[in-house]
Every structure is written in C-alpha cells, then in structure tokens.
Image 1: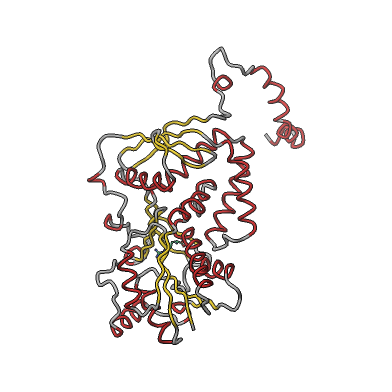
Image 2: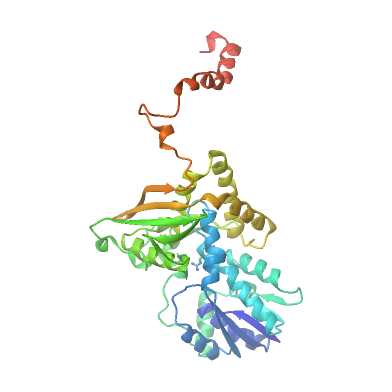
Length: 398
Ligand code: ARG
C-alpha cells in the first residue's frame, strides 16, 4: 500500500507518518506545501525521513496561494462572522490540491491528513481531496478515527524515538502569509485576554512608534497593486503590510467563532495585512459601486465567505459568485490612505478613477449642480405610506 500524507512536520503528522507505515505496512510519501509558513523546510524533510517516509515532496505553493485564493478573499471582503479573514481555511485548498496531485502521480492507494474530528479543517481537506481523487483512493484521518489525544501522541513519539520538537509552543498555531491562528492553553478560557507573547507579528504597546505614519494602497479591479506608489506583487504587499502594521499594534482579532460542526471556539488571530486590505477594499467599493450593488454584494460576500469557511471551495456556487465579483469589481480602482497611530490603522482618505462620489453634487456651497427644489415632490411621494397610516388610524392614534 502506498499513502500520500499531508505533512506539516508537527507532532500530529510526524506520529501519523510512523503509524501509517506500521499499521498499514505502507510506503508513506510525505508532502509539505509551502503557503508562507515560517519554518525550516530542510528540517521538516529530515524529520519526515526519520519518521519513516520513503519519499518526501516539498511544494512551493506560495504564489498560487496568494494569487488564486487570498486575492479572492480581498474581492469578497471575506471575514467570517465579520472577523476572521479565513487565513487557515484558504490555505487548505492548495494544500489538498497538491497532495492529491502527488498522490495521483505516485499511484497512491490512499491519502492521509492529520485533521482532528473537532475542527473545520477535516471538512476542507475531505471535500477537496475527494474532489480531485477517484473514489477508489481512500482518505485516511487517523487522528479522528483513533480519537488520539496529544498525550497519547507524545507518548507514541517518545517510544518510537521520533524527532518531535521538544520545546513546542503551548498553543496550537497555524500560520501562513495571510494570518496566524492561535488556539489552546489559557486561551480556552474566553475571559482570559491573550498575553502579548501569543503574538509574533503584532508588537506590544511598549514598542509602538510615537510618530504616526501614512500608507497609500493602490487597487486595480479590486486588487492591491502598489504601496506608496511602488508597484509590487500581492505577496510583497501583504508581507510589507504585516510588518508595517504590526509595528503599530494593528491586526489583532479575538472572537468567539462558530465552527461548522456546531462547536463554539475562542479564536485569536493576527492578520494585520488581511484586515487592512479588506477594510480599504471595502472603502473603495463604496466610492465606486452604486448603493444597490453594495447591498447585494454584501449578501454575496457573506455567502462566499461561508462556503470557503465550510470547506466548499469547489462548489459551483463559489465559482458562480466569483464570476459575479469579476464583473462588479472592474471599476474598483483607486487609492486608499491609511493612517497608522499607536494601536490603530484608520482610513483617512480615498480616491477612485470611476468614483460615483461627485463633490459638485453633494457640496453645500452655491455652485452645487444639485437643485434641491426637485426634492420637494420626491419627498412628498416618499412619505405616502406614512400619510396613509395617518388616514387609516384616525386622529386619536397620534
Ligand atoms: N478556526 C480557524 C479555522 O477553522 C482556524 C483554525 C486554526 N488552527 C489552529 N491550529 N490554530 O479556519
């Protein structure tokens, strides 16, 4: 038997690698997909072989992660429950695609992942892997199937002499360029505020610069293309914003999240670039899109976000919504100005080539192109419903 394993190099998947080999007498092919997690990929490869892998693949999916997945999150202002920019969720799709591709190439009989039965990732991985693989390729999720606990895993790793990281963080962390998710330990008490040592990108108050700073972000057709007049790739823009905004203490999320399976969980994220880019994008949309489009798009955004959160990237509805956004976002080009101050990043200006904001119409000065006398008839007709109520209820009701 030959199994392709989605391998992060952490405790779960390292134990999994050895366990699959022993339990199924399988040849295990480990696949590590780079989506911008800061890790030593050489060390991961060595660990995979030490855990019994017969072959290891390292796949650089950084640019496609950003161009095909993160970019869409910006177009749809994708914040799950209004807060979480889907960083972990989005990364699971390219990971599953790459694992499936290698499983097919290597003629594997099964693929395996280390998702637990408590989270959303199992849904994302299962749905995506089964979309890309023929039905006779099995999908194995032993952590879920065997109900493993962390203590059991550590014990197993020690008994087999597996090279797990000794000084592992007390938190469960998932990181990529779009965000860093932190769960567990004292954060499981929703009343306990996250200590500053939870954060890596966001600096504590003692380090916030005294002087404010401005950043101008240019968008074209809904996507960021330049910072302060310098044209850059989306990857570079996100990386730079994470650092510059993090210095000012911006980008922290602490919320109670509803998982698909019905559990509520306390989630802490740092996502400076994601939050700033989505807010700026949304601000620019308001300059360019008519009110009806904004109202309708808010529903679309929410639907898209929930599909992506719930593991349904390869759903025809998501694809159709993508076409909708492509059409609507054509004119969302312009610039948004952010002012960074201690602990905050606020939008302080915006301009757009196809702006529907027309100063000559809105101005209160005498040169206004808007003749307010025309509003008289409009206002009378507008109040018709209310006036009919007056007639119906009679004078005593008032
Ligand atoms: N709740 C988020 C999601 O379902 C993030 C999960 C992150 N995982 C972690 N090990 N911290 O997408």
